[in-house]
Length: 267
Image 1: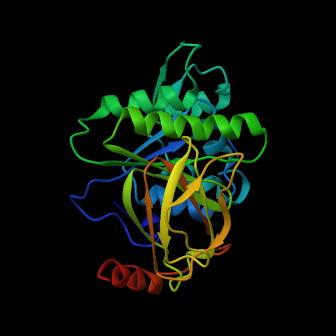
Image 2 (image 1 turned 135 degrees about the horizontal axis):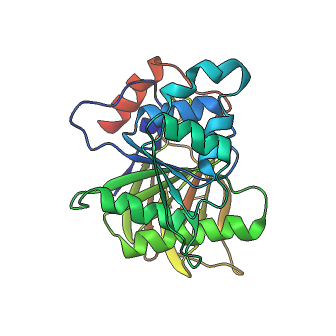
């Protein structure tokens, strides 16, 4: 499977007729406006998970207030216990659908995923970009990773991308996985990590500073954190789900970097 995370961060617009990713905004701080804006540009269906609508609304206070109406979500969905009255009123007055699921045995992310899956058929692969965070409470961060694994194991046609404060994280499935690092384009630093989030795994890598061959990894034993990509493409073979994380550069490159991404796809 091929992974090209930089394609969601370039400045180009979404190609007509393409299978557009979905954007899921969680009730967590949106740390970087530029990252948000580029992810928004590359998606067509945008869902705020309950209080995620508060985060979206608040991002357009003061200097950006005039642009708020240009970034209306497709729907706000959840048990709605976190949605503020002023936010509900604003988006409702602008025609945004607001729906409630009172189930207390599922999280906002789980509810949002059910809503996304109900919008259309998943006969083809669907990329879902999650705007969230792994900072704050440790249990919530681990819970978010747990839900990513659960959703991908239950729905093999979806692929989740977690864009947190300074990273993008995604799940590598069994088999051979090729990750375009876009090092020369300037989207990501060399810092990467591979975590056996689903249980013990055996991995073989190429393109990293510390490559391994048939290397057993599990929590409490040995894991490949704080590794470095040294090639434009990293290959990871695994026999179980693992979480791959790449550190994003503090400033995103401009349009000229898109040519570097296109070149990498041809390698």
